[in-house]
Length: 62
Image 1 (spheres, rainbow, N blue to C red):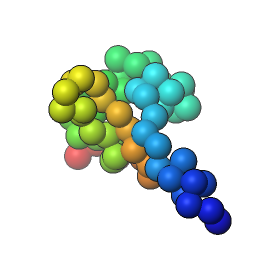
Image 2 (cartoon, rainbow, N blue to C red):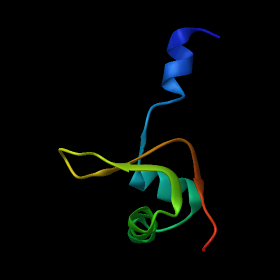
Image 3 (cartoon, rainbow, N blue to C red):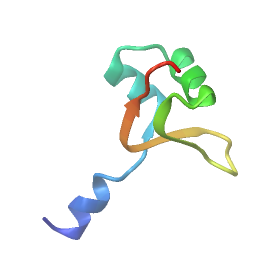
Image 4 (cartoon, rainbow, N blue to C red):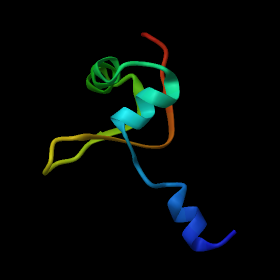
């Protein structure tokens, strides 16, 4: 596997894309990000937007 392929697999995805992939609304995904229920979700320090980094997964409710 080439380096460029390895890096492309680690590109963050938007909340909208993650929500679409899971069949959830963006509002629900934002809520889960704030609650810490999405493994790999990080808030950008400058833009304050949520980005989800692979391997992302929805964690069960505590």
